[in-house]
Length: 92
Image (cartoon, rainbow, N blue to C red; front, side, top):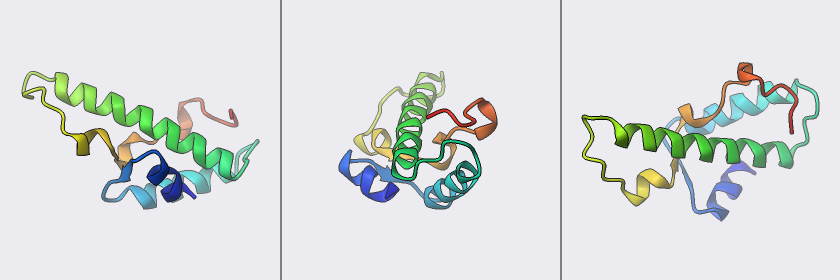
């Protein structure tokens, strides 16, 4: 479901991202208010926001030239998924 949702919004899962998504969803299943596809969609949306923040922070660093490629903007990496310990317990 997650790969299809990414493809629909023209995002790619970067190296190592699929196992991270599976682990995230596995943890999320054990929490209240798990809702299958809705939970997957929310996870992808949160990762997309995390990706935007990651790219922004990388490109704003003094060591960066500030140039962003389309591939960078369209790739979700493992670190883009939120930690469930960050207060996301059961909120959908």
